[in-house]
Image 1 (cartoon, rainbow, N blue to C red):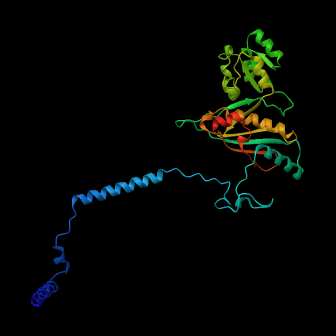
Image 2 (cartoon, rainbow, N blue to C red):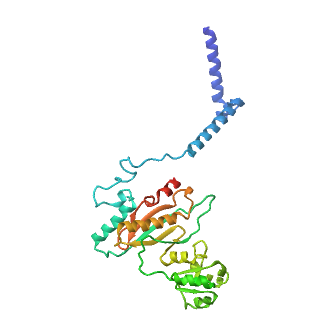
Image 3 (tube, rainbow, N blue to C red):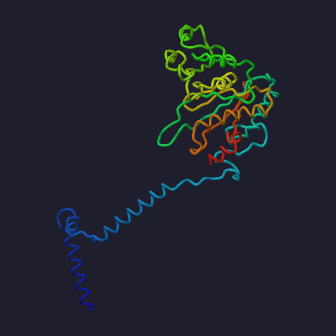
Length: 320
């Protein structure tokens, strides 16, 4: 047994000497050894594992983000706390406080007393709308007229009625129309001799007054706005004391809703009428229409409020 091991060691030492004494780099002898090859089944198994890992990564990415309830959290991320302790604080260190509509109105009245500003200053509302619809469609910017439950204007709007029927003209004059006439009013309007706040027309005369379309622009009678109708008395009732607002910059509604010296209940009722009319221009099944709501007076800071606090209960249940 000992002689066998000695012979093996001699053979191994001889091979090492031949490798060291051979000319050229030492890796030439090693490179002649055939590389170890893996069976095909092993490669297939590795590919299957890679596919499984990719699918798992995709599933992780598609998982919906968990909605965190911020009410019971001690503080928001990156902020000091949700609500400051006193009235003096740096705004950037605290989360924005969103009030109810009633609380926002009472805050504006308190600001007026503290700042000694005029009590009859106007109150404005600023709404940012979500104009998206299904299948990449959008709500077209619109103009609307709403009858406020508590008007803040003392003077009535001047309404002009286009009609050639004597009976309809008589009804229009009885209901307070400023000007009533037919196609003969086209040239005076083009010459700026006659003007009005609103223009109402019956359907029969609509084709005759088309030359006024470029002159009147947004005030031109349209059926969507209710200014093209045979019910002249109802249209005059709306437009004489109606409040008009429009969508600016594709998604913003900025308009006056009241004056600050009005009772809080009346301001809240006017705000509710405007927000409800705005939300009627989009299907409730698509979710809330108002993304952001701000109210302010002429001299006060902006107060953020929740628009759902002024919507009727039926509209809220439909949106949910």
